[in-house]
Amino acid sequence: MRPIKGRMTGDWERPDWAPLIELAPDHVDEFMWMFEAQLENGLVLHAYKHWETRRYLHLDSAGRAFVYLWDENLAADDDGRYEEVDPQWLLKLVLDRERSATFVRRNVLSEYEKVRWARAASKHRIPRRSVHHVFSRCRLRFAEPPPPGAPAEASPRLVFVGDDDRGRALEVMAVEPENDTLLVIHAMELRDRYRLDYEEAKRWQEEP
Image (cartoon, rainbow, N blue to C red):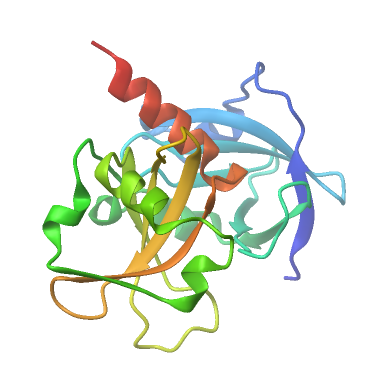
């Protein structure tokens, strides 16, 4: 089905668990209700995030499931796009614990012998020292599949979220083209796509 535009409504206070209970009654305790979003066709979606895998279910009251289509060229104030998918397929993907996010509080560069930089990494004018600062104090790291249309042999993208030396929250993407090498391909100020994960990681790490 064609993608449908939509955006968060700003309602963060009234969780609705009914769609999740209908789809996955045995897994309700594994999820957090995060926000409500409204599509341009009037459908209201509720976003639930799995505690461990950090992935989302977007469900409407009729039991339909949607995925958010990430677009790195989308401006922060643009409507996002959602696509309807099979609910059981999405649930299986979300529950897959083999691809979970990792909270970190260490210098992740210690895991690599070499760091390289793609030309695209400077597109948003984030200095390399800022990226190194994110790596040295990374709050959250997880993997994402290659974008749609990427070659079949394309590597997963590693996403690092953290603060730079000026206190700005940044997102950094990299790939591992060969053993012990990290290739930085993207760096910019944190977008809404990762904001909730960042805030949660920050709270988690500040707890005594």
